[in-house]
Image (cartoon, rainbow, N blue to C red; front, top):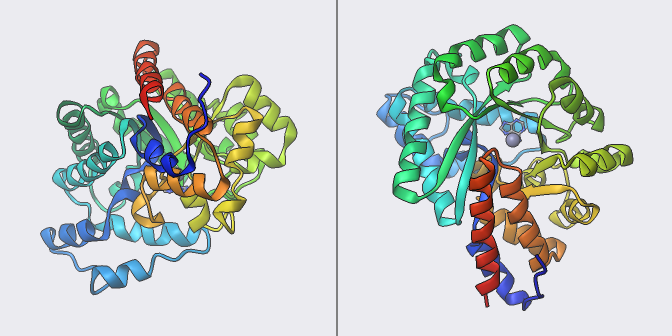
Length: 345
Ligand code: ADE
Ligand code: ZN
C-alpha cells in the first residue's frame, strides 16, 4: 500500500495508534520492579535490593550477559501459577494499550524448573492469561517455549518432553540466553523433534553473535524467523538470502541500545534493513529492563532514524505477515491495518 507522507508531529500518534503484532517479548522480561517486589512479599522472599528505586538503579548493562544475570535473579520471585498469570496479565494489558492486537510470547521453563517450579505451573499460568486476553482485551496471544542455549542439549530435550502434555498451549519453540560461544547447531536434534510435534521454530541469532549463527539457525535448526538478526548486515550473501526467502527478523531497538549492540539509536540499522527489503519487525524484548514497551520502541527509533509513515505501515504489515497466525486471520488483521491507514488524518 502506498502511504502519503504525514506531518512529522503526527507520526508518534500514528505509531501509537496503529494496530500491530508483537513477536519478540520475553514474559519474564516484562516483570516490572513493583510487581517483582509484590510477588516477593506474597511468597515470603527477600530480594537482594531494599526497594524499587535501588533495584532500578541496577538496570545499567554493558552486554547481554550482564543483563541476563540480573534478569535471572528477578525470576526467583515466580513461584506459583498465579504469579505467572499476574506477570503475563500485566504485560497483556500494557500491550493492548499500545494497540498490540496479537502477541507471540516467549517464556522459558528451565529457569523455573531450576528453582523447583514445575513446568506445568508455568505453562498453565501463562496460558490462562492468554485466554483472558482474548476474551477481555480482544488480543490474541500465543506462547513460544525458549530453550536456554547455555544449557545442554539433554536439558533442552527434558524441557521439551515436559511440555508435551501442554502442546495445545504452545505455538512454537525458540532459543534464548547467552549467545556468543553457544552456536545454534547444538540444538539441531531438539528443534527437529519440536518440528515433528507440529511446533513452529524461531531462534535468537545475530544479536551479539556473528552472521554465521544466523546461517546455522536457518540451516541446522530450520527456523522460520530470526530474533534480532541485526548482525546480518555484515554479510551481503546472508542479506540476499533473508530477502529472497522472506525470513523475518524480530528487531528490538531499545534492547540493542541498552545492551550496547549499538552505541546510539541513531546508529541502528533498522532503516537499512527495511530499505534492503528485509521483513523486519519492531518489538520490545524485555521491556521492564530496557526502558519501554513496543510503542516506546517505535516512537524513539522513528525519531532517531527519521523513518516515515511508509516505514510504519511496512513494519506493522510485516508484524502480521511474520506471525504464526492462520493465513485468514493474518489477512483480517492486515485489512484492519489498511483501514487504519486509509482513515488516519
Ligand atoms: N533472554 C531474554 N532477553 C534476551 C535477549 N535479548 N537475548 C537473549 N536471550 C534473552
Ligand atoms: Zn530476546
